[in-house]
Image 1 (tube, rainbow, N blue to C red):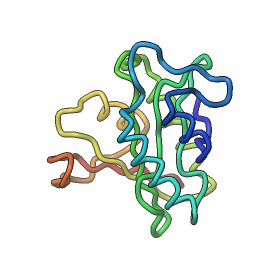
Image 2 (image 1 turned 90 degrees about the vertical axis):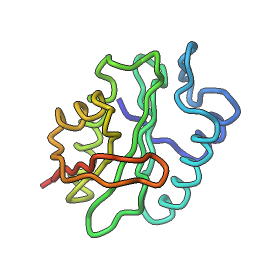
Image 3 (image 1 turned 180 degrees about the vertical axis):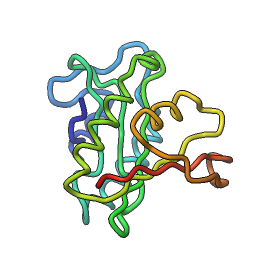
Image 4 (image 1 turned 135 degrees about the horizontal axis):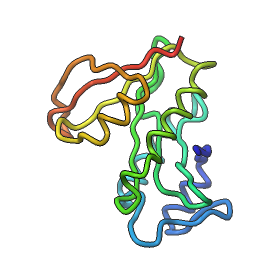
Length: 154
């Protein structure tokens, strides 16, 4: 399930705790502190125009990952990113979270885009299972070669 991630939640996560009576994954981090800080900044910036802009991926009261809008909405499209604690990979959590995000988006936008690493087969499968179509490739300054994906919401 996805649960809206607020500025207060980010602050609590950055202190190493779980917000809202949830639990953190005990054996691996959902994201390194520098990534959490970056996502909190992006969420604050996007949240000034469009909310919510970030979510926790929660399974059985445990925060197993994060999902967020990583680029300001433009022409009815949002661009998302997501990640999961390494110890919680390959359990279907992200596939279900993205499906839920698509349902949320139906009333708000017309398209969702995302990028995956060329070698990140698991992430490519998550998007394909959720109806995303591969639209090309590009070189990202931080991530190198990525595959571009898009899903129509209409």
